[in-house]
Length: 298
Ligand code: MLT
Image 1 (tube, rainbow, N blue to C red):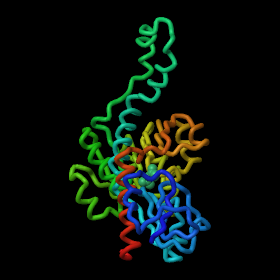
Image 2 (image 1 turned 45 degrees about the vertical axis):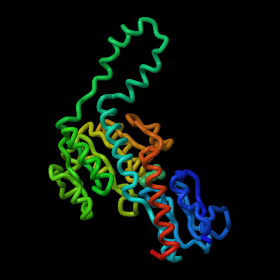
Image 3 (image 1 turned 180 degrees about the horizontal axis):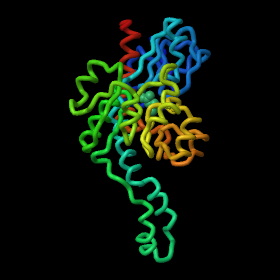
Image 4 (image 1 turned 135 degrees about the horizontal axis):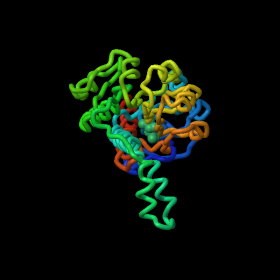
């Protein structure tokens, strides 16, 4: 019998794969495996009995991976399982931002009971003149499972796409359209692009990778999209760049009090992977890995 501790937010299609007699989903103090999504796990949360932890998601920054490795606990994630969901939200946000949709929708909600509503609309709509993404340059920083899908989708929307990833995997390189330009440095992305979208994991090396030195090189009014992790961007430098107008808009899936109070920020509440399909894909992949490891050691 294997005891599995499941934290919330795991799709039923995944946990159903534990329905056999040999598994028990439990709150026991000595589970064999742990299954979680975004729950912030600290070392104290991990009992000695645990052999493997599976995260239904790509990032593992909510798990103390180094401590787990020292203790011989294997950590799994589900790269690619939510890539399409993230891609769709990035592209939605890119277009919505360029067309000032976030601001425009917010405004129309305030005029429901206004007098002469139609007239008001015709007068005020000039505030919401947007721009088209066709022909504009977008830099995709990180060409893993998500970055590749975003790059190819942007290309299909007639954008000029520049991808930067010094560690691109064979699989990703294979999937990335040949019409996506490859940058040799981050600076190349910073200097050329009208939009920059981040698709890399958070680690000691990538924390704050977007900072004053990068902002200085960017085009005036650049729009930065962050659907990876908030900590990739240095907040002090972001605030300065937004204040000066260097960054025209910061579109983030990682709101916090400070960022929400900066100007020209549009935020969604960590929704990148939040589709039914993605949650099921991630849960199934995580459970399959956990089962396989507990049963066969692989
Ligand atoms: C990820 O790391 O893939 C996402 O953060 C998943 C999630 O939304 O839980």
